[in-house]
Length: 194
Image (tube, rainbow, N blue to C red; front, side, top):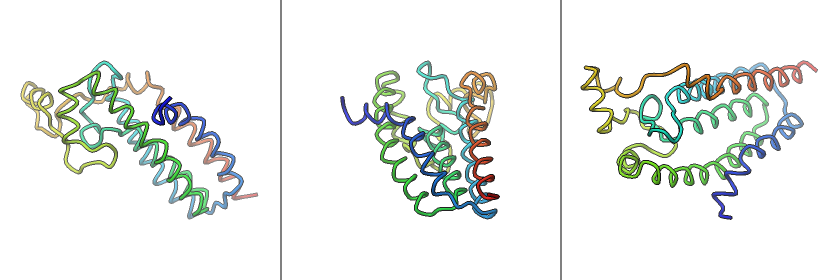
C-alpha cells in the first residue's frame, strides 16, 4: 500500500481523532469563537458551492469554484477545520490542525489527480496546467469546454460552465458539514460558559 493510499484511508478517522484533543485543549472566548466562525462559514460556503458543481467521476468539474482550484472541497474543509480550531482559542492546536491536515490531504489530492488523469486524460491535463491544486487562482479558468459552453449560451466567460445545482448539493449531503459545524460550535460555546 502506498503512502497516498494510506492517507486516503486515514483522512476521516484522523479528524475524529483530533476532536477530543480540540475539546480538551480548547479555551474559547467570544473573540476566538467569532473569528473562527467567520473562517468556518467561508469554508462551508466553498464546500456548498463546490458540491453543486460536482458530478463525481462522470464529468470533469471546471465551473464554479473548480475554475479557481482543482480541490475546492478540500479547500473548504481546510477553512472549516481552521475555523473550528481558531474557535477553540488555542494557537498550538491551530498549528497542529494545519500540519496534520496538509500532511494527509496533499497526498490525497495527488492520488485524486492521478485518478482524474485516468478518467479525463487530455481534458484534465489541459485543466491541470491552468488551475492550481489547492490555493485558488484569482481569475476563473476558461478552458475549451467552458469557452464553447459560454459561446453557445451567449454568456460572458466568467459565467461559463455548469450552473450550481441544488440537487447535487442535496445528493452529496453537504448540509451535514453545516450540521456538524453547528454541533461542534455549540460544544465549544458551552465550554466557554463552564
